[in-house]
Length: 184
Image (cartoon, rainbow, N blue to C red):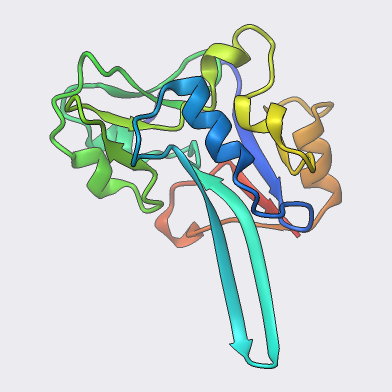
């Protein structure tokens, strides 16, 4: 069972506003010193249909910071854990043995093996959230397509957009209860 946190931070990405520019990917790499060839976030593009009747969806994607994170329960050392203050899923790199149990259990492909041997992933910029700042990806998005906030606060912007917009979530059948919302 995942321990209860003080708050439940999540992310919403507006698929109408997202243009797939990758500014969020670059900001994340810079902010978190992500090594070349690796990424904590990425841009997805899904094209459906047959020419000339095609539809496309574009969005920035990352760790879903689940309410029921299998990466936490599968970690044998406790390196993967839920951050008490924000409810985000984190990795204590000094405790991580690089066994890859969390990588295998994540249905979203959100983790990678850092060249130094530990598992790394999106932290939802918890260091910035603790200071009251926006995440690096949210701060740099030129179309304001990324919204991060406390899902338990009914007055937060993320709660407002989830109440007022249609959205979808990925791989709900995995039972992870993701906190990542794709606004339509």
